[in-house]
Length: 298
Length: 241
Image 1 (cartoon, rainbow over the protein chains, first blue to last red):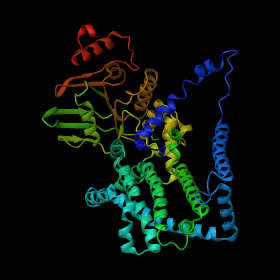
Image 2 (cartoon, rainbow over the protein chains, first blue to last red):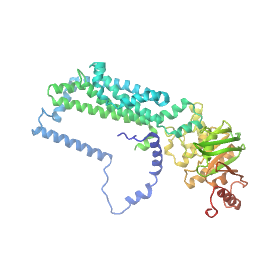
Image 3 (cartoon, rainbow over the protein chains, first blue to last red):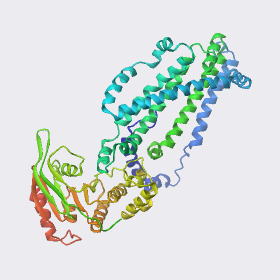
Image 4 (cartoon, one colour):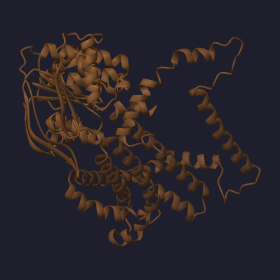
């Protein structure tokens, strides 16, 4: 769950009270804790310590997995060992095919995201800013949202064929809904107190949108963006499972066809790493776009 | 900030406000003199805040007429700063001008409330009292002829409240705009205002001038007498005072 789960304005108010209250007990409370003579408590592991511990867990799991393979408990036809997976990844990287496949997949996601985010943003803006547009746009979109978007795949195959358009189209449908819904929710959820403020400050409609509605809806919009990225990834996996001759899904398909579990695991690892990287990218965007929100996100 | 600001009067004629079948205020006539400091006092639900919001234009769902200056500023009980805008930007919200001009003007207004150094911070880093001062700076920047304050000290702790009251008084003395202050704190009303209007049971039940020298001395017996008179009007019994 993203840390900005609370509605934006409420979160801000919490931020205010938190920042005024958390500072207060610093003096006497911390002195009482550290000032007892002879009561030496083991130092809590810091950020680096926890990071090391988490890494160690991953390492141990990998070693166990590798040992099980070497000792013959896991057959390579069932599940390739970490060494075999890395060998495959290294080989395809040197040979150049990995980067080509990566490029093809990233292009599909980027294109689908661009179209889906643009459409979701436009729909969210017009529904959020106009009551009559809301009645026209919101009802059908709320109905469509009840559908699991991946269930649309067969229909999209008929409409778009089984080539690139299908892969991009699936990403688009996965992206549009979270972007639309969260932007709309963000706009509608802007604290009405700020509308009163806009009256007494004499703001015109354009100023109201620019200074109050858009910044107020931004945290929710970014949550939508996060969900849409997660969906984009799901769409890619499903879309690339159909008739892929390039892309990460192609590696997956070949692995299946040739019973090469090292290729299958390698493709899954790539999907996972890309997912983590994109998540980090969104966090970075949040940091840049919501500098005022950093207080309550800690 | 110009010190030769003008003040404007407020005139209400036949002001009536209903919520459903419930008549909150009926046929209220009230004239507020230019440059005066009037406190509107009443119990919760007496309609004092609603009346102020109607004067401000926030609440337009009433009958009757309200005449007032266009140059009006409003102070809310909460500071109501936009958390996503820097302090200086909050002060000049919606005002025309170049960024450089607005920044300079904002700093000038912030200096009046003693916060010139806080122009470039986020509102959430300020204390409650500081935030309320920023909202006063925002009101001042509009160079109002009429300043409407809706329990602006209600959310502050006792000490901060005294400072904030003194600040509002100083600003009023310096700028001489008309002030209408809504409060349920009778002592606050007597300390600051030169006229107290009590709203109860649908109308004005008491309208008294405060003929006490400034700064007001709360220990004077005339202060005490007036306080008792207003409290009795508000339905507080003699042994509760």
